[in-house]
Length: 405
Image 1 (cartoon, rainbow, N blue to C red):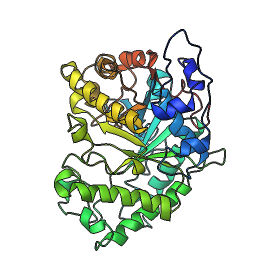
Image 2 (image 1 turned 90 degrees about the vertical axis):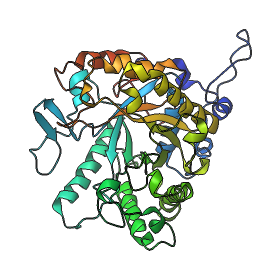
Image 3 (image 1 turned 45 degrees about the vertical axis):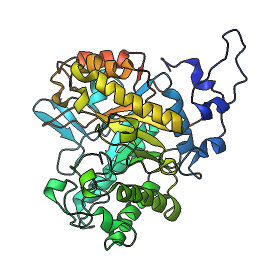
């Protein structure tokens, strides 16, 4: 594949464990003997020491590629999009059938995104199990996830989880009911929460690729917790309650429900300026494989690039020190009101400081708000220029992500 440097297949494991990047004391010295780590050695770095081979390989490849490249991702990449400003398409039960190969990113650039974003909100919500709409949502999510894996893509799931106490919205403003303390062990809604996790585990086991292997998933629960807009947000639970919830989530899925195809991601929004602020609610290295942040606000224009880059640096440095993968887990400019945003804002911010981020994911395209251009949008040419940059990799430019080099 193009754009890939030779280091991808020649990384010494001893150095990878220490800092993730090969180095020499003196340029005149010969390169040390190169050893690719074994899957067993990689698993020792993971939250799940029994993760599938493909999941362990994904972790290694994400961390390794971040040395010199970044993958581009798109939420709902093959689920929904726009043909033009007035015509929305979506793989939904109440709309006309759309090819599951359709993608705004692919239509505009010729390549699929490397990372596909999905959501557990319609899979583990509170609804009548006989409701055909939700049954369809689960079926199409499964299909799109497997198809993304089969074409070599990386799948990540967030979770806009409806309040498990009120059984209503995940937004605090629409359902202002405290829930975190009540779904922890000993809480009066703990069994409700366990049932939701059991639904996720059952779904995770149903994700099987054409190769017969479980599809690896980057699971990102309870994101943007440093804001107050979700019921798990900072104002609605203590730091210790949040950390306990995240830890229980991992332990129950991993230890009780035997989910083996998850990497666990943790990402606040942009409400931090120092590492100590960033990790205030960090559940610990034993529970997190990928650290990131969601950042829209600092990436609206070139005026705040330095702030965005500094926060990326904090995330990247923390990941490096703790042997994690780092990512810009959500970003974008709504409706791309600046036609050259991808090259003059996002790309510049990513390159302003030395960072090692595995991917940057733009949010989903809808008629009321879109984050990648549709065909003939004024930003389409700039988006193609963004794809052409040697630092950025789309789906047609990445190597095999589920095997060791």
